[in-house]
Amino acid sequence: MKIKRYKTIIKQSAGELIEKKSRFIAHVFPIESEEQAVEYIEIIRKKHNNANHNVYAYVIGINNEIQRYSDDGEPSGTAGLPILDVLKGEEIKNTLIIVTRYFGGTLLGTGGLVRAYSHCAKEGLNQGEVVEKVLCQKAFIQVDYTLSGKLEYFINEQVGIHLVDTQYTNEVRYTLVVEDQFINILEKKIKEISSGKVGIDLDEICYFTINNGRVINM
Image 1 (cartoon, rainbow, N blue to C red):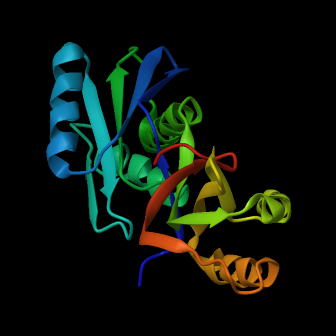
Image 2 (image 1 turned 135 degrees about the vertical axis):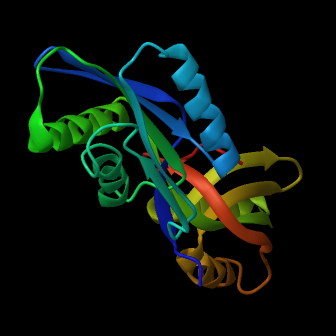
Image 3 (image 1 turned 180 degrees about the vertical axis):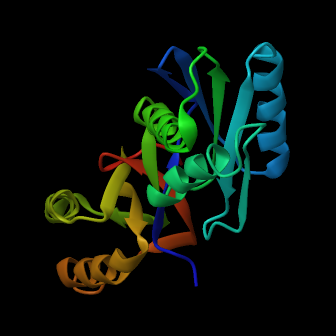
């Protein structure tokens, strides 16, 4: 059974942290495959080839099917795993975080490393744009003008139903993105306001990107 919604990032971002003169730089990437992750890791390694460490972690899949991390020479469990824990703790999917470290001359200790890598990873996410992927169906409804006012009022008031396009011809055609659990509510309302004369055309169920209540991909 598919989960109803999950969080991911929509674009690359970066964050930075200075801890006892060590410079930590977080690079955050949206990814869909391990091949993408490996490609981005190599890009950062080449860009920061004089850094002491390029630590990473990534999660791929709606149910975290793929989880990988690397300490890249830092003491075991002090770098890559804390970054992975940030991704899992924030429930962020399909995302890669690489943290580059330039050593500042002072050892941070095990606890200090864990805190630094965790905080830097969080800062990278904070600088990005976290969105929700929500299980939805695209719905098409065509009504005459006498029903359009009631329908639009319902759409504007009902959570989980997003109006993405309206076309005015001899009738009014609405394109909606409807969160999966609200399909039945929409069908009942259309039947009610049209006395059963208007139906809904539905596309297949898939994930749509929603940010601040707006559908931002079609």
